[in-house]
Image (tube, rainbow, N blue to C red):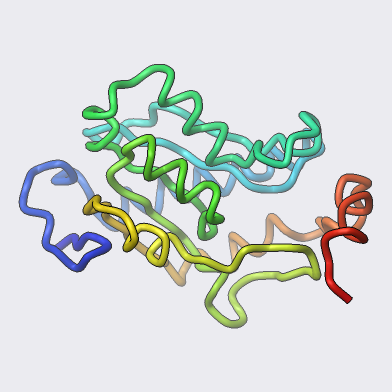
Length: 191
């Protein structure tokens, strides 16, 4: 049974194709894309958009460093691509797959693009499941943001069996090693 962010049961057939196995397969695809983003010199994050039948429609790689754009998160890049191609009514039947919890910016983009379902492998807000660094962040979950809205978006996950796979893509990645963060940290972190 799928529940929305407001705790309502999904009664339409939007996500009748969903199975745990399919969700895990699509999350693993997003995790692998995170390695691709990392190989291209970016943060190791990515996302996948699945259509109304579970087929992959779009992939979004993080390109923050190579684009010198702090908004170029994997989810933001995917949402921009999807919103340019698909009608909001169609996107309401789609699912976005993200290895970690989307940041507030990406959560808002998902909301405004009208993507109907978010699937996360891990939550950065669960103690001990995610690597953290001393970098600026807004600690708001999609649930906290979307409960202020008026859409019955579905959130599925986390899948604890994927935690180690999600952590592995962070091996060798430290944002504090990148000039992008070195330039912004001194002015953004309160000491």
